[in-house]
Length: 470
Image (cartoon, rainbow, N blue to C red):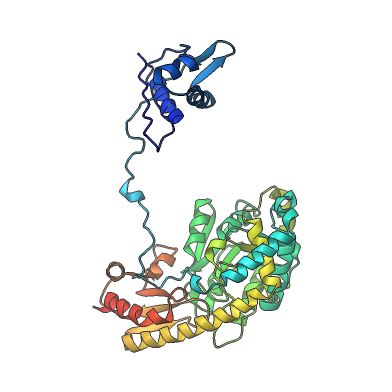
């Protein structure tokens, strides 16, 4: 006997959906035989006292999903289906290990090095640039040429001009490849190199890139730092092809690589045809008390530097616009092997960025934020020194949106991190940047200030002191 009922008062479920769900369950439970004919639409409508349209809607949905089939002028019949286990629960309980944390409440204070100040972003100016991009580039948004793997040409041209002025980068727009983040571009780059390429990264360094290279089953080692950055003597003692470095503001120590070490690295790269340097210039827009340090790529006369940049720090991380600049030899390989890839960064966001740069709004925003971050940085350092006294040492504070701190505390890193959670402060230790697990870590913590308002600095330092010392 067919068990289908309809509740006309159920406003959350259309009548045809009620019929569809019940018939689907009956079919899956094999209460119908394979090839058994269903009641006609008119007969089913009469049984349930509903309209023929409601029954037809249910039948059509079942037909579309393959539960039934139709024979012209005959009716609807049940498909032959294998048995699957049925459960009354439509969704199993989520494993506690998979639960995601929600957005922290306003009482939390962030010392994160991964943020930007969202409250000071010029949203109105950005929206105005978006409108201009829409009005001037309607064809580009639907034209397949805008989806080429390297990104929209006019956007690359604007980035090229910007980098020439602000970072001393030498390139043509054709050499720029835009992507939806540094990680995705690194994957593209590594597929250009031979499979037996040997990579090396700074220790400590950018763990997300290190883990990505490991995930790709690539040969990657780590090289420790000296007071000038990555140790050139250790590089010369290794059989390496590609170095990944952050010379303008080493992550996470903040070391600014002097020109002497930069020249040594360029000379090392020039000595072998298969040697390259990846320069990740992730927060180069922000320098304090000194002029902007020109890029390593700008010194390169051998075309051995692959330059990476991002707008995540200068604008908003959620925009997902990064780029890499390939030497011409690698660009030829890229176009030969990977030019079929589609663009991973939104075309509209790219075109808005072009308007934002060309109108001068980008440089205006950077100038403002550099002043804001500089004042915030000075106040935070003074407050930390005043509160911790001789128990703190600060490193790499003259650039970027974070600095490194060493604390003289009896607590272990784990104890500090646990107490930081209790104090509602977002804090990261240098342990997250340790690439080689055999190398011990010091009681050092990365202190970011981009998402820490000046008004909350003193409260944040008080909480940090309790987490660190009490």
